[in-house]
Amino acid sequence: MFPGPLINTTTNDIVHVNVFNNMDEPLLFTWNGIQQRLNSWQDGVSGTQCPIKPGTNWTYVFQTKDQIGSFFYFPSINFHKTAGGFGAIRVNNRNVIAVPFPKPEAEFDLLFGDWDYDNYKVPSTMANKLLFYFIFDIHLKIIEFDLFNMEYLWNRKTYRLRISNVGSAYSLNFRIQNHQMLLVETEGSYTQQILLDSLDVHVGQSYSVLVTANQNEADFYMVASAKLANLTGSPSSFRSLVGIGVLHYSNSVTTVSGPVLLGPDPYDLEFSVNQAKSIRWNMTAGAARPNPQGTFNVSNISLSQSFILQGSRAEINNKPRYVVNNVSYYTLKTPLKLADYFVNGSGVYQLDAFPTHSVNTEAAYGVSVVSGINKGWLEIVFKNNLEVIDSWHLDGYGFYVVGFGDGDWTAEDRSTYNLLDPVVRSTVQVYPGGWTAVYVFLDNPGMWNLRSQLLKHWYLGQELYIRLFNADPNPAKERPPPQNLLLCGNYHQILYVQHYHFIF
Image (tube, rainbow, N blue to C red; front, side):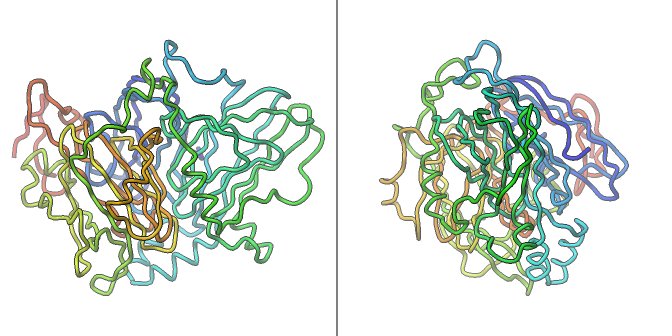
């Protein structure tokens, strides 16, 4: 089944997902934007979970605790994501919580992203042979988008589109011919409602928009086109960078015609930044809880920590890598979470060796794990020294997107932050040569992945982990390991016994 089946759930539901690995290599799934409250064991990334071995199955069990919104899942190791394996997640409001817009006639999940036509195993092979830049970039010039036909829309009815960029490299601009979109939600936050002719959706991001079928009955183009890409070349290169779908009215006898709907200039970053700044939190709407979202705000908070993270490229031992503050994350065979549980990380990682405020003089590998202060406010400033739009995601949390800027960030830039109604989400874009600032309240103990959503960047080291620990045992602040815990790496020979006893 492609894409994967929809996970259609409601706030506080407990979700069971049984994954059968029929591949010839290990597999993991992660749940992009699902916060896994007190339960990073279920997060599904290499630092928290052993992979599911070929020919076996494993069941994820997690709760959509205090969440609503639009999300998606995808395979999280190697280059599996370029081959598919992703699907939509809806977390619906409980009936007792009012939704800040009339109930739509129907909902559609729209997943789009860039593709690699080659075997998903090839990019990692090329990386090991030092040809990664050349080979992978050529592959990414041959892309298409998975847009589906929306059929049988009834005139004058309003529909909800849950949109996700499930790609690996390109930010995309989405638009519908002769139809405006009303933005209402992003990654679990209801937004101030604004009408849009087009919407930039960056890698890993999700949105909900309302579309009203207010035209004469006909067929209309839906278009997704790459940002920072030349769309004026040959027809074949144009088609490889633009995905086209069809919005079909129920009684339409008129097929789509004319030129494909043009969007904003793909190199116009001012348009994109201004749109990003216009996406703000709906302070009066309830979300997963009956109290308004604006009950939780950042107008009068005191910062406990601040990380300044610079993303760039480097060579380490003559191999191309992506780095954060000149450290390229080195993925171990032993998940950090296992080491943390059994031996407090000893012999696997060194806590807080990663530089959170400075850039190392020389690029090097590292197992980057930093401490978060429990119940403290963390400021993260992402600085992008690359030529592409980067996209950063934090598992376990939603963060307040308080600012965007050009050039180097300084403490004086805090005066430009939006502290009144910043939107809360889990994935944020960082523009080339610029910075993005977020605030996050660290109230979810666990081991949490902070990564670039661009797959090439992530695979080659642009990530780290935030460890949040609360030693108070009364009550326990984090869930124990699941009874079906997978073991690997340094702990593959441990005998697992029920009630969470382990025998070495």
